[in-house]
Every structure is written in structure tokens, then in C-alpha cells.
Image 1: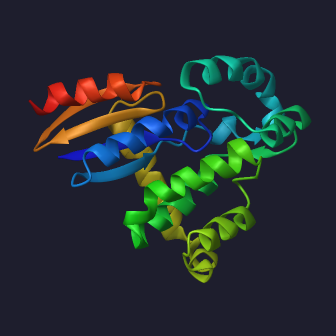
Image 2: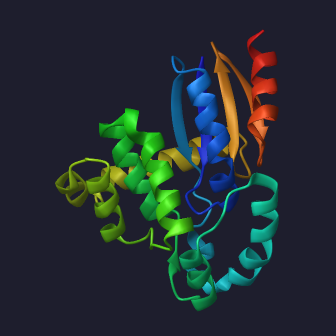
Length: 205
């Protein structure tokens, strides 16, 4: 059994869904687990967060009400200021480096990025943010510095984006259970842990 979690660090609903994913991992600690970066914000969608800040600010109350998560004051200030750059590519490269060298830390890193972004308002396109996250998790910062702008990191991130597309994932978060050679969509969009657990229980019966 394997959990495939399709995620994007710039997806607010993924931040809301993080608790359910963590509980699922804790319920099935022996299952394989992998995060697949979706590449939600890239190409023509990259640019200052001000391009989408009005929409995001209007959506935050609903996300908070449905999930119980709270977005930080610093993140709200980033939205109001509107100048911070947004792109899913740099954080997806950082996660790809973690997945390659420290796969057991991938969930912790994804969670750390969400805390840095949605609570502290840090810039996930900056290597300086990721250097701090590496240091906080006890990962080698020098490795990040050597690989962050490498062709390999970009290749791995793009492979995740392509795999997500090949699986027909068009929105985030999404969670798939792999049972042998079969794949089952367990969550599409925000789902509570209770709902998720019920679906997974039916899959494994």
C-alpha cells in the first residue's frame, strides 16, 4: 500500500488538508508515502502575488471555517502588499532535493514550507528561505546550495509535474491510494480526516 499525496506549496487548501494527511500517515505508519508536486503556479501564472491577492483574501475565511486552520498575520500582510513573487517551481525543486536524498523527511519539509509561507509570510521562491528550513530540519544546507539551481533539481520537479498531469490531477490537494497495481482516488480537494479515513477503509477492505 502506498499513499500518493498530490500537493502544491502555494495551495491554501493543501495547507488546510495537511492535518488530515498527517493523521492518515500516523494511522498507517508502515505504508509507503510520497508527495507529488503539482506545479500549480508556473509559466504565465508566475508573478507578483498581488495578481491574485484579492481572490485569496476573499477565500481565506472559508478555508479557515471549513478546516480550522489559521493563516498568519504576516501572510495576510504579504497578500496586501502584493509584491512578493509567486512560483511553484523553486519550492518544488527544494522538495525534490529532499525527496532524492532524504525521502523520510519529505512530509516534514512540505509541512515546514507551509508554515513558513502561510504563517510567517516567507518567500518560497528565495533560496534563503529554503536554507533556513534545511537548517531547522537538520538537513545539510551546503547540499541545497549545490543543487538548488541544478538541471537535476529542475528535472525532478518537472517529472513530478508531469506525473501529476498524467494521473489526471487537475486540482490540489488530491490523495491517491496505490493498492498493488491499482490506484484509488481517496480525496479530491479539501477533505476532513474522518471522510478521508472512511474512504481509505473502504479501499483496503
